[in-house]
Image 1 (cartoon, one colour):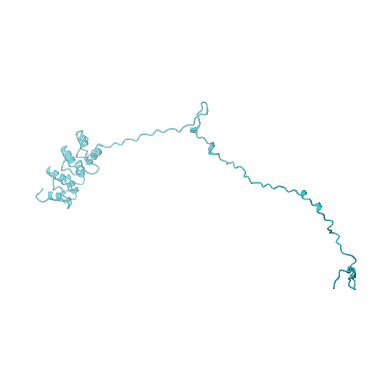
Image 2 (image 1 turned 135 degrees about the horizontal axis):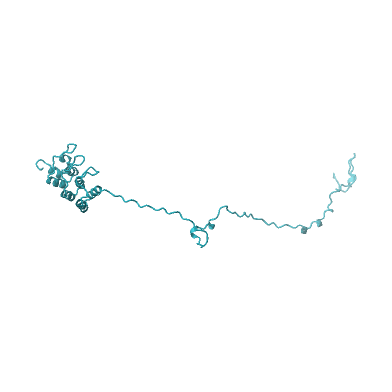
Length: 226
């Protein structure tokens, strides 16, 4: 064997210089100096950890909440307290002025609607003249012919309307009846002597204004019939 623990270490030397004198004993560390008795679990006291929760600070709004608002109308009245709130002055509303129409305008409207009773009242009261030219450019008899109301035409003629009356364009009531296709009114006017040869400002006779499709008027103005 190369190494034998039977021999002391001192006998194992190199022939030269190194001869360990003693065993190596560390002076700093010794297992005898360390004692577990110095460690006592009782000396360790663990502090119980109590977590702290975040609590936000209370928020106070700068404006007043709606719960503190009390309308004036809901406040109980107290005698001797502060004066009541002044109301805005009430501005009186002026009633609208009634629109008043002239007798000519009212009479023209009665003719257009065939209101025979009202027409008779106007005529008996002499509120209008039958030869008056209205703003429409026509006289009362022209308006009656345009409405197609034969009874209204008869009533106006009864009160003195002229069958030869001309409007601002030179049209007679017969011109109106032929132009608008009222054969009954045209026949009635012809029976009262209305002229079939009367010409308006454009040189047109009543027969020139007849619609060719209106056969009844065309036959009325055939040669020899008028």
